[in-house]
Length: 257
Image: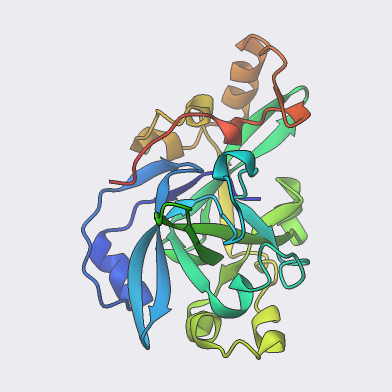
C-alpha cells in the first residue's frame, strides 16, 4: 500500500535521476496525500517529460467522478485484467519520483506511522499508471495510481502490500516497452529486495495532511512511540465505505506547489 509519500531531493537531482527534458522548480514536500497533484515522469514523443497529475485514478469511462471511489493504488496481480487499468498498464505507464513513503503498523488498537526510505538515500521511482479523464463539458484531468504488490521479506513487518519500485536500469523498459510486451512489463512488478529500504517510527503528526514539514520524517524511539500511543485518547469510530477510516485517508486537500 502507499497512501502518503515525500519528495525531499532538489529538483535538479530528480531531473538528473529520471532524465526528463523539462526543468520544473518545486519545493520539498513531506506529506503528499491522495487527491493532490503529484509529479510523474512519462514518455511523450520519444522524450521523458515531467507532468503533474491528480493522485486518484479515473478510468476514461467514468461518467461522474464524485460517484467513483478514490483509487490511489493498482494491484500488480490484477492490473492487466481489471477494466480500470488494463489499457493504462499497456499504453500509459509512468514513474512517480519519491524519496520515501509512510506506512502505518498496527500496535494494539492503534496504528503507528513509520517512514520508509531507500537505504542509500536519493530519489527512486514508483511504478504508476495514468489516464486522462475527459468530462462531458470537455474538461480534462490527468490522473494516476501507484502500482503495489505483495510484500516480501522484512517489509512484511510493516504491511502486506508495498509500492512497486522500478530500478533505474529498468526505467526505459517500464516507460518505453511496446504495449505487446506484457511479459517484460509484468516482470518488473515485483516486491523490492530486502535491504533496499530502511524505516523508523515517526510522530503521529503525519496523520494530518495539513502538517508538511521536515520534522515529520525524524525518527522517534520505540519507547516514545509506545508512550505517545498510551497517552493518546482513543479516536471515535469512523465509517468510510463500510470500514474504519485509516490515518492515510485524511480528508484534507492540498497543492503540490
